[in-house]
Image (tube, rainbow, N blue to C red; front, side, top):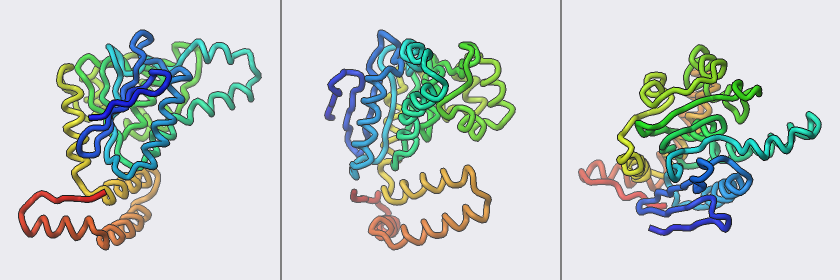
Length: 267
């Protein structure tokens, strides 16, 4: 295991065996609020991961008792004296961290320990899968602050939960617990707090053991399927499957199947 902390100390990067990388938001005193140093550290980590062919699955979690309490309200408040267009441009720059995480080529799993509130919820939603500790809490609390939801919340919640449940979260601003989140399909699993990271890394390791090319292609097609019709999705799937059938991974997968052994996929 290799630990790399960025110069600000805001993010800890752990390279674990099997191609799993764990990113830990590291400002527990502020409940891992998305302040400028943390945003910059996440953007840098995402850039490194995009270029790393050995990185097969990523886990994002928080240090201390929270996943992420939301955006740095002090920084946003300081920008509130600017004009509308200037504020929009600053928010667009801030939102780039969500886009970068969402567009990582490998699967990303959120291990949600404690609160995932506002922009913290957005960060969890940008991940492909979400595992929640029993202590986890989720909230799209924007309207309680007198502001419109941002960071892609309306897009992601509507597609993940459906329009009615998305509206309930966004219009009420209420917090929900892990079991309610599971019933709404906001999270994939709920586990005991002490088991959260181990359970999430175990799932990441299972994913990372599969063909990297096939996993990355499947992630791309899942993104297309959110907005495409069935016929378009079939077309994308047929091309992706044809490409992967010609890969070394497919040769290894078929050999392993015939030999009744675990496949050994290369980066």
